[in-house]
Length: 555
Ligand code: FRU
Image (cartoon, rainbow, N blue to C red; front, side, top):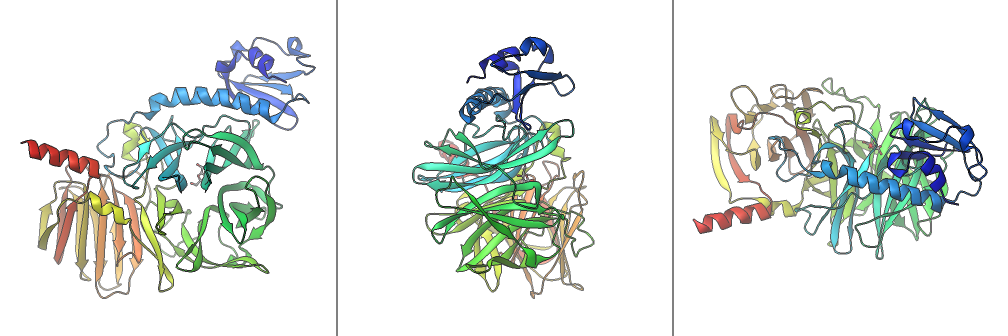
């Protein structure tokens, strides 16, 4: 059957913003309720169906769902809504001017960015998607923005991959991963919908497939019901192949408000069978686990999870959203068991990472440089918020996960400058740079500095603690200090800075601290109370480097 007559009564497709299927009804949400032409009685008997009513407050027209309605009919309407959404979002794909915009990190042109999604190598190039809220710096009705790159440095924007256009994802195309399967690029994601005045959450795990790596065909839910004893907080599919079968991991909240991982299995990527809920051995470990990833690293299985609601051991750390990794045992008898949670990042802004395997066998991670509840930062004055982290290579050494900047990032370096600071300062003249230094305990180092602002790194010799202090910056909300205990005799820092962020790799990648740092444009100085030799590189994308060296050649 066609939905054309319903849509005509609702004022035409241009007036339809969402289609919802609560229970046995079919609901159209519209932009302008006054454009709805029929009244309930006159809509009786549209294909034998009845218009149940119009809810002016919600802007919704409700019908009994026609028995002959097929999922193909609904997908066809979804495509029309998606076309409209893509057209309307075009104005949001133009980047606003802003002094805080990164030079080489991925940031949204406008609106809010959160999790990286679908990070994968497919048919000769890398794909990276992100959760995008185009219309405001708030978490609303997420899209999947899409970028591709040949070298993991230069990311080129693509048409928006997925919009919240369908009955199964009308309130957000939520996070998920990609699978490169032959010539098909398959995106597994969570469809998020909100039904009725109470905005009841419904989640299903959905699939969209692309033959050309550019446009994606939604297939609808492949996991349409919740696992037993799991609340609708069930999301963020990670799909991987192991022992001749496909696994799907889902972040889940059990009905007793314990975070766990739900696991489904498949042999064809389309039909999924529930396998179990895992993580009981972690005990009381947060009310929800978000954004799982799982992979082998140097012969060990490791899972990344985002437990929400676990306490930090630091009095400075008040954020409930954590992110870290656990060791994993996979066995036919016991299924999946986890042990030994460790934080992945010790800075202020890191969440929801995902990884890919490169063709040359490296495991590369990208995360969200932001946190779920923090949406007031200076960049919102220019209409955008948050960015992705730089890419990191992972290895497993001495019982812990080591993170180092992606090798390719070195090609952004200008020729090195080596200098010493001895209780002195230096103006670097840029906020996009790399610094390497070995500091003694007792040193105090400041960067992104002018007379009123700075980001401070203090090496407290008494407690052997590194303190990262952003209290003298333009930050508008969130914690001000992070602390990290270290046992090394000195502390080596590799700092990658980019306009309004730092990623501090400590002791050759043993720890990382990632933070947004807002200081004025000309806050480009560093000072050291202590004595040390620094290696310094300006950082710019290679194409920008070659543009400037060409210019120099012409002079
Ligand atoms: C994590 C998260 C995911 C969810 C997405 C929605 O930041 O809450 O669990 O899929 O963001 O944007």
